[in-house]
Length: 171
Image 1 (tube, rainbow, N blue to C red):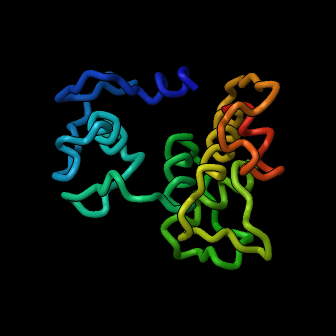
Image 2 (image 1 turned 30 degrees about the vertical axis):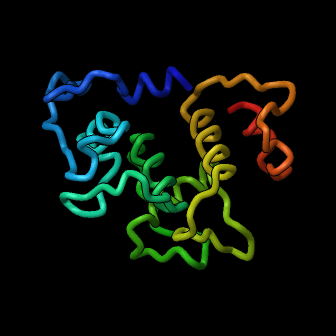
Image 3 (image 1 turned 30 degrees about the horizontal axis):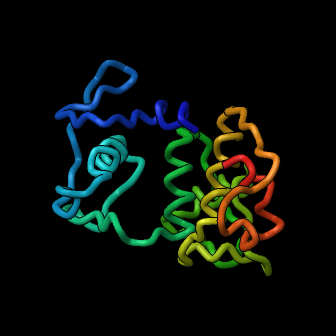
């Protein structure tokens, strides 16, 4: 995971320009409501790379919960995939939805599955358990080798579902 974070380019230093791979620089994208937020530099970096967007041009809402569609879209953009997706098998994801390509990508690459009954529930808040599964599967999709713990040491380990156990052991 540390290698993935380094790949994204997170650092503790704030910069006025963000270097990108092709030796060009991006201008910082910032929001009024992140000025004193602990994640300010991370938000600015990801927004400047068009991986995340705000709620508006001036607001990011850094302490809001994130939806399933928002997290999957973040991972999709981070993957830098070039393949276009035209259709989703989920009946609650339409071709016109802003997240359709990301959800289709996540389904095809087994990063995310639905919640049953051909539904993805894109506008439901993503749980900690789902977030863990999506991120671990994404890391594996990106080629990172993740080692598994022998047992869950989280204080709430008994709250995790069987379907998430393999991913949670790698978190």
